[in-house]
Structure formats: structure tokens, C-alpha cells
Length: 438
Ligand code: TRP
Image (tube, rainbow, N blue to C red; front, side, top):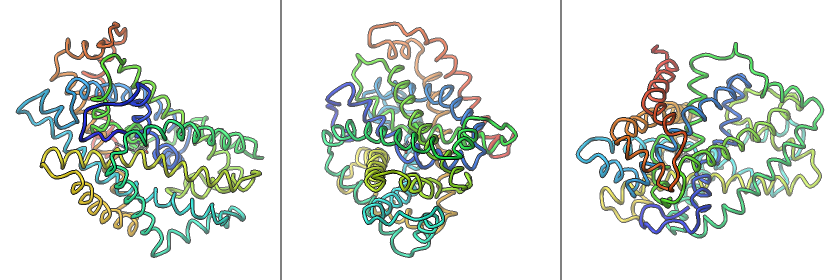
């Protein structure tokens, strides 16, 4: 990812921005959060709703964010301030900063688990029966040192990357490493699908049981869609400001969303067949992926090598997401309050470390941070973003920005209708219904 806050020289290639935006989107949200929330929410019906939200709200909100950023050529605060001077729209950015603090806190905890699993994989400790694997995770969670240690290490790594402004570095590596992660997941899929008893997992994932649906599950599916696409808080707007005018924003939003969704589904195809093949339960909660995947590696020739590679790549995927979160806060502090970037980075890391420690200490804090950011702040941010595009910007300006690459976009009227009428009302309804108000 580029050093988004401090320079405006953009990305080296068209693929560079898509890679960076996909780097932000693809992360623990796809491989850890999607399967665990789906497993807790009854399976196939959740998947269907999730896909619906990606298409109906995810792509339009992402397109809206991209267009706000590219039109203003600024990060999210600057963008709202210059497009709507003297009006409080920049508060969307402020909400985004709050969300970034909360997400980064619990995200680092899970990334810390991933680091522990890199260590366990290297030392060959992820072996044994499914029960043993279960106990490894539970013992780790009960430990009073290592979960804190790895969380802090992860935050420190993120800070170092953002500090270095390693533009070319990250862009170059994600282009190679994310496709490699993709290939590894496919290998896992094949292995998982050929396990005896895998069919039940395929059924769980693809055969919807609508009796499992309630307001809470619908809200969880929407929150997961926002979380996984990194939308609703302005991160994507900042990426948009680096996209050349010659690029079709609608297409960009579709490619990023498709890639992100594909990875989540492929992760599900690895996990659920294995869950049932190993006689486990799908509703294990946050530990699901860590309790299931080692069992698949154990059944593979060269499993140790695969498991090391997998957890290393997952850590890198988590890093490319966490730096986008950290960058939001740092850009805010350094641009709005004229704090030096390096000071902003260390101050943020210190505060987030404290919040992350609370998340390790208490699963209640962890769950509340997770819920409040994904299911409250991101959807509300999304509503404000589409309202901004639908009612504050001029229709002709919106159209001009979406057609800046020189070709008419046939979907403009549908997009505009969704952004003005459907998305704001529907997102708000799902939100209020989910928390039991309507
Ligand atoms: N989308 C990332 C994931 O799936 C997490 C993430 C990174 C994020 N930046 C974000 C979520 C901004 C919401 C907003 O792992």
C-alpha cells in the first residue's frame, strides 16, 4: 500500500491500486471472521444474505467511496471538507477514525493468534488428533503471556510498515503473495472436499435453512459485508483519490468485491467440509479456523510446509489490512492536528495496544468492539456515504466522475436510484431491525 497520508504521487500501476484496495479488503475478515460468523449463524442462509448485501449495498457503497475520494483528490476528511465546505460531513471521517481504533484493537488480537500459529507450525506442534488441536487453541487462549505478546508484536509490525511508508515494498509483495494465498486456499479446498464425510459441510454452506434467520443474523450478514470490503469508514475513499481518471470506478469496485467474496467463499469451502469430516461443530465461535485448519494440514503430505506457508501468508494478509486501518488514524491526526506522522504513529500504536490488551483480557470487550464497529459504525457510515453521493453532490457531477474514463456507464441510473433511495433506507432498516427497534 502507498504511504497514503503524506504524498499524492499515486500508484505505479493500475493494478497497483486494485492490489492495494484488495490488500485492505482481503484479510482476517475473509478467512477468520466470515467462517466463524457464518458457522454461528446457521450456514447457507447466511451466505445467501451476505452475497445479497455485497451486491446490493457493498458495490454501490464502494463505488460511492471511490468517487468521493477521486473527485476531491484528498483523503476522507479533506474530501468531505472540500466537497461540502462548512458542513459537518467530515464527521463521517471522524466516525471512521473511531471505527478504525476499535477494529484495529480486536483485529490485532486475532492477528496475534495467527503469529502464534506460525510459531506452532514451524516447531511442528500443530499435530495430533482433532481433540489435541482443540486443546492447543484453548490452552493458548488461557495463557497469561503469549496472547498479549503476539498482539503487541503485530501492532509493532504494522507501525513499522506505516512508519517506513513502504509504498513500493508492499505493493510489490502483495501482488505476488496474495495470489499465493489464493492457491494455498484452493489446495486446502481440494483436500477438505475429498475428506470422508465432507458432503455435510458442503450442505451446511450451500443449502440454506431459512429457519435460522432472524434480525440479528441479517444484521450480522450486513456487518460482515461491510467489514470484509473495508467500506463504510472512508478507507476506500482514500484509495480512490489515488486512482487515475482513466480508470472505471464501477469496474474497480466490482473487481475488488468479487475477489474479496471469492476468497471468503473459498475459505468456507475449506473449513466447513472439514468441520463435519472431523466431527466438530460449526458454531465454535472465534476459534473456528484455528481449530479446524490444522487438522486438514495434518492429513496432507508435506502438511507442515503448507501450514507454515499458510499462517505466514495469513499474517501478511492481516498486515495489509491493519496498515490501512492504522493509516486512517495517522492521516487524521497528522493532517487535522498537524502532528508529525511518526508521533501520530507511535501515539496511535500505544493507545491501540492498550485497547487490544483489554480485548485479550476480556472476550466481552472483544465482542463489543467487534459488534459496535462492524454492525453499527460501518453501516451508519455507509448510509451517510450514499446519502452524500445521492443528495449533496450534483447528479451531473456524480455521472461525470463515473464516466471520467471516457465511456458512458450503462448502469448509472440503477446506481443512482440505489444510492438515493434503496441503500439508505434498507441499510437503516436492517440496522434498526437487527438491534430490535423495528
Ligand atoms: N476488510 C479487512 C478484512 O477483511 C479488514 C479491514 C481493513 C477493514 N480495513 C478496514 C474493515 C476498514 C473495515 C474498514 O480483514
